[in-house]
Length: 164
Image 1 (cartoon, rainbow, N blue to C red):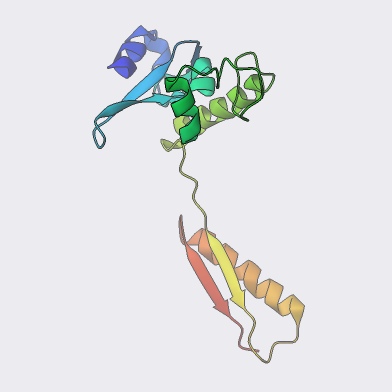
Image 2: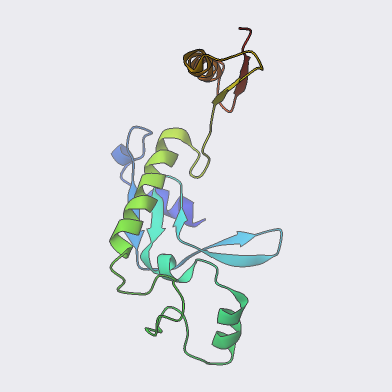
């Protein structure tokens, strides 16, 4: 619903696939998970527009069990604690700007591919047989296997067997 609302707020000329819209907010974001029937805090929601939460950068990443137990008991730990008890991001942290750039790049990647976190890989391998003594031939076979893997599509593995 929030994605539809955000989309409806975009001017008509900014709704096309040729435009990348990225909104930053201090508000928290959450999504409902049908599997465990609860909301989960999120840093970002990728759509048109993509929405990135700066408070989500601090609050959304999962922490270890001790953090949640201490928080439930009222012990000062976590985002507002400046004791350095954990290495999670804190509010006013100098790293937030660089981290925001990373999330913005994910939003751009989503706009271009429709896949915000999916990285694909094509791999070419060459197997050294017992008779191969020429390292240059092995490298050439490995290169050719890589080119063959890329030419055959996404997520491909090509193995080149040396016949020398």
